[in-house]
Amino acid sequence: MSERDDIVGLRHMLDHAREAVELSEGRTREDLRADRMLQLALTRLVEVVGEAATRVSTRTRVRHSSIAWTQIVSMRNRLIHGYDILDWNLLWDTVCEDLPPLISGLESILESEEAGA
Image 1 (cartoon, rainbow, N blue to C red):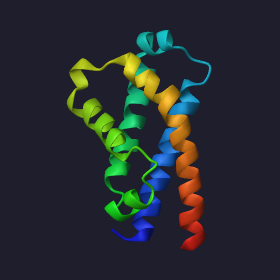
Image 2 (cartoon, rainbow, N blue to C red):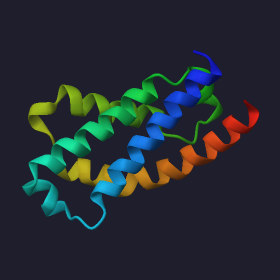
Image 3 (cartoon, rainbow, N blue to C red):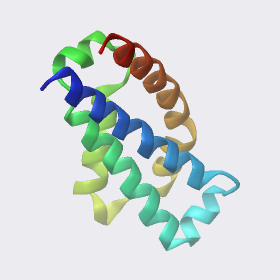
Image 4 (cartoon, rainbow, N blue to C red):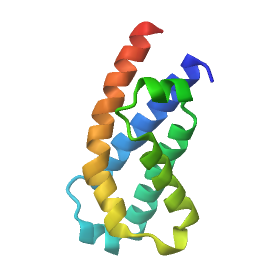
């Protein structure tokens, strides 16, 4: 995968993570349990973050080892393959606790990657 493709993947991760966080703002864990549209939206957005992570090259992943690549991809796999036993608490925690620091990390990475491109 080229450096340019990695930037595209990182950008997709960032955009979808931001959207998930924005959708959760002003909402509660109980809102997630009660709102099917919110469940579907957040599930899909987190899936895309994980899918995009799978497309980032090993070289870039190693260079930016502060990102929890394995956990991000694992969450994607859990959502896609365990669709019938989704844990809304885990999804909520992922969106509210894990995505904000991921967004910060991705912003820093993209800033450095795009400056070098």
